Amino acid sequence: MKQIWAALAAGTMLALAQPVAADVKGGVDAWQQGDYAKAVARWLPLAQSGDPDAQFNIGQAYKLGRGVPANMTSAIEWYRKAAVQGHKRAEDNLGLLMFQQGERANALPYLQRAADRGEPRAQYIVGTALFNGDIMAKDWPRAYALMSRASASGLSQATASLKQMDKYIPAEQRQQGVALAQTDGGKDIAAQAPAPARDKKPEPAPTRPTASAKNAAKPSDSRAQAAVATPAPSPSKPVVRQTPTKSTAPAPATNGPWRVQLGAFSEEGRARALWARLKAKVSGLADYQVYIVKGGGVTKLQAGPFASSAEAARLCGTIKSAGAECMPRKM
Image 1 (cartoon, one colour):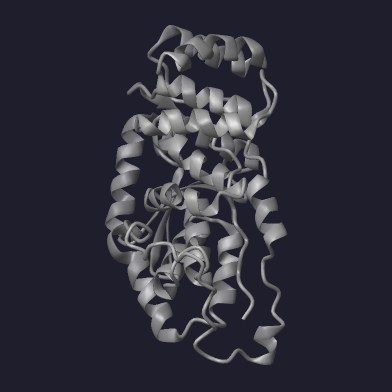
Image 2: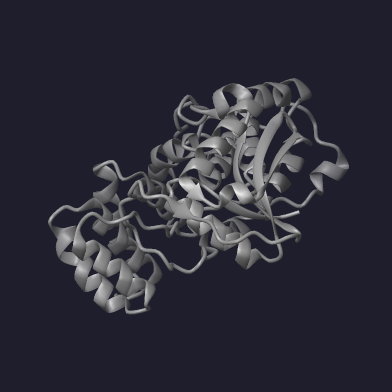
């Protein structure tokens, strides 16, 4: 059986935390105005003195080559400094970028924690590793669970990989994976996965694949790396600490094919509870229509509609500034 390896690593996550230090905020303002050199000049002294948000921002600058020459080694070093201090987005980016740079085994602990926090690209990578059994011991139920969570978050590569997994993973193990994905929102699936397998070749599939399955196109390493390197939205927001100020949503459209997805849950009650919390934090969000979409044992929370992806992205920016996750979706 050919392996699935479409590793989606590091289209860098670019949101910046709301600032406490004035110089961090000054750097954010400069970054948003396109003056990247000035932003780096503001952040570098703070990063060198140990500020984790500034360290994350410097990592972003090196990753993107803005204000400084692109340097993945330096980006990894700054992400690691911030991650050691508990900066979750830095840890997510660290694992994704290390994986992209070929440090797959060393990236796994970071990716496992990111996957359990709900980062869909990390869920995709760890799920792929668990399916292949190359850099981790094979565990098909957990692989299916993580890939299901990534797919439910809207990651198209994960949806495609689930279809390929269906050809090889027995129905009973797929059912176990679905049950795992629904347990407590799918938390701790990756953290409880078997330890990495060293110098061990992948085991053959437990059932003999059909001719059509043998010939099925698998995501290749090259496609995996391309997915990993796909740039995220432009870094209009550097990393700044979040403040509890209430955000204001843009005015809603009357119709359109776009929505924003705010989360995926095992229970409808959790989706509605998040909607209630977000309405209290984001002024104007209640003017949008809420959608509770059920399918595959997962309940998705969405809002809309929007006439364009740009309008959906603007609302997502507002929601993210309130400390929540958000992803534009075309219906």
